[in-house]
Image 1 (cartoon, rainbow, N blue to C red):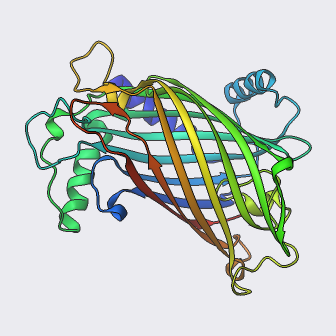
Image 2 (image 1 turned 90 degrees about the vertical axis):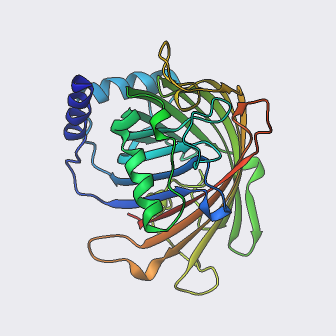
Length: 343
């Protein structure tokens, strides 16, 4: 574990941004908005994006090789993103101190992530490559974080963290290709448009290994061809807001997003535990689906000389059961709130 800690610390130093932070945002995931406290129960992430290409030699070689294979070799480098975050998973009843072998195990992840975004010359395809490294188990700090939050908001204290997925260095590489679908896109009324996009995503690592595909419908004004735009880059993809972008008032812009995703799961550390170790775990479902709905609000009047406009985004995800058990395993709903400044 000393070696793992040193590797994570070195990664944190190497990933520190070298360019000015041009877009910053904070995301909070939680299921308490839907009156539950189970499964994927909490996630926090602080992220910042910069337009300067600060890739080192290793990152350039990896992203270049990946893009040649994925078809984005001629794409324009768009942005780099640095993220630091924590994920938290619990069983359905956190007041039970004894092991619960038929329910989802306690698990946490404290991670650092780096993403690189590339846009094809025609603006119709957005490619995202990612690398994530983190620590699970007690070093994820999920147990003290949840206990502190529950103490502050006066909720029941979790009792079963002694039986959590153990500590390991968790690594994952990922790639996503999001493609505009012009045939199913066009004006709805006035300047309001519908943009449809299809995407696929794949991840490989001892954190998760899976393949996913999905479809999104975005409704709004002055939308980029590939919508919805990831947080923090919408203004750059549209070349800056022009014309009528208002929603209800001149000082407000709004965008509605609906989506569906299916995933084939080959491995999930947070469900199955570490291989060949005596970790708690359950039998995962190999096919999982999500339905998503989100609303983004932009406030163009908040743009400053040194930063872009503020935005807030809320997304709801309804997920099918992720594991099998003799008892009923319900679907789960998580809310995601993002607050930040755009470019």
